[in-house]
Length: 136
Image 1 (spheres, rainbow, N blue to C red):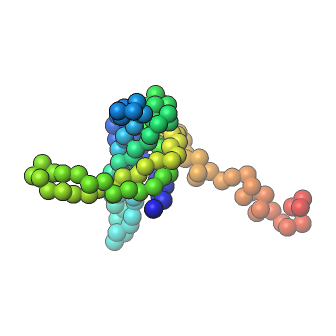
Image 2: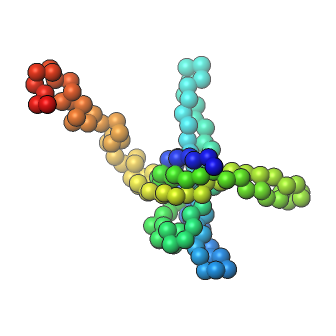
């Protein structure tokens, strides 16, 4: 079993389906961007990852997740065979999610003055002081 974690944006509204036993299955496509510098120029590559959530969590998340939302997904990778239109058997990777957390939409991120992670935490300011002034 391979564990993985990713952060990305939903490419479309998630799709909720029900199995024969009545259990929910939520499928979504997450766009994960990677920025790299090649010969002094920044390039961005997007990978699409299929994510599936089962059970009660699938139903709950289907009420809250929408296209464009930023999500954190943690789960296990599984190979999923499928047949192409030409009849060829192929395999793809899918994340079976144990955890899905949603943050915001891409539009909300664009409206913020600076990402929260880029701001300097207060604890770091304390550590910059002289050792004699630290209370512990």
